[in-house]
Image (tube, rainbow, N blue to C red; front, side, top):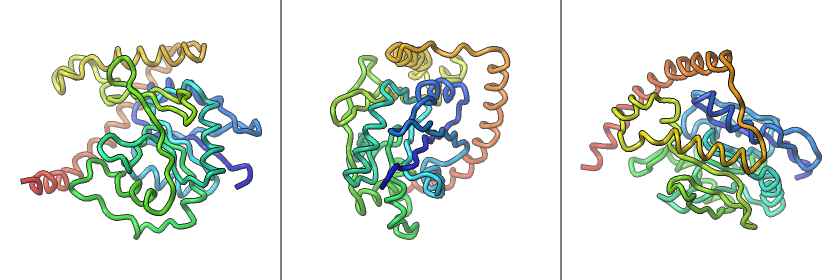
Length: 259
């Protein structure tokens, strides 16, 4: 593949968190110095946004970065793209802790051009009740038909954040987890899940660490930005709640299957 067309995709719910994450990768360029476009994907399922990437025929290589994964070495990502292309990998990512053959989608480099040579939706099994996440069948299909580069990772000193590593050991990004609690008022989090009430301060500390490593200033959001974030949050919840309700019958059948 000569001079692959690269795009960054982020499945996003929280516009503020997306802007904070994007501030660490929106100036990325490919090996030829071309700016890499960033695409925010909203209101998409945990597996559906991968199919959206596949349909984007203006993109050969997708860099998938979650909005709670904060990039500390953009050059390591571009070098990883080179490895994926030259070595014929279809996917590079960190193994999911629940199934080592599946990569967790907080960070991936995906060779869309290679996947399209064999992609057939009918070959991808439906999600079984034993699959903890909807994206499991897709990544199992990729692992079965192509080569996957499994990246090493380690735990941050905060005890939660995952540090994704380049094959040479360079830190790629810091993935905080629990971003769903980031924009919730603390009193709501305490009622929903008291154990997670400390997530926002921890995530803010990781954001500050990532920006510090990059020697960048954390964006200073103005009133206009905050109003935009609030409006976007209302819109996202308006769409997300019906999506969640529509999944209740499947979740009920899954729960009953365990008994």
